[in-house]
Length: 215
Ligand SMILES: C[S@@+](CC[C@H](N)C(=O)[O-])C[C@H]1O[C@@H](n2cnc3c(N)ncnc32)[C@H](O)[C@@H]1O
Image (tube, rainbow, N blue to C red):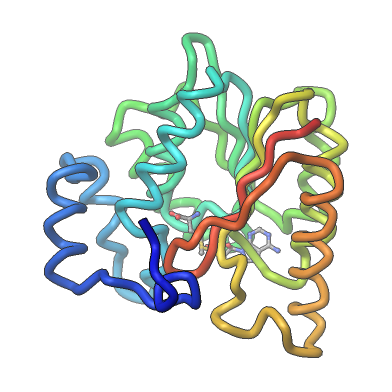
């Protein structure tokens, strides 16, 4: 059921409800807790526990084996995704900041996932072309610099298998999606590209998550 307020964007979530539902459905084990608590000097901008769990479940639903992430931070979403991979699967995750990548590698090793995940250091637009021969991919998760979402989306559509999953976080662009800025134009291009090539939706997570299945 929905009502006019919720259809217009109102939410019934409170911090207490969120804490309860995260605890019941998306509780952290030691490895996720470690990757959720970033060291001094690194921003705490991971997915929330429910979004991490959602990405995990979506990958499991499609039997994902070969997955790419743009925007590793310290490996929180990478742990969720690597744990969802079918046997023999692999995740390539791209991170611009060497310090973030270093912490991510340590967190992934502590989670026992070092052999299932490769952390690549560099800008997404430079690193993605080097991964083409590992594809076609089952899923691409985009969670990095917003100016490049249009380019990331184009790469994802070109390198996903039919039925593959494209995911893009911060799809509301912190409330600035309809602005005239370069990053808003890029984010809208991403939305429109995904809608044109996938069966898609923008789910109403805190900052919007685009989910598309390539036609
Ligand atoms: C929102 S965080 C990623 C969070 C992570 N996906 C998670 O949920 O655990 C965005 C990351 O993208 C990285 N980043 C920024 N610009 C980038 C670029 N051009 N290429 C790759 N990574 C970039 C940032 O350094 C930051 O670590």
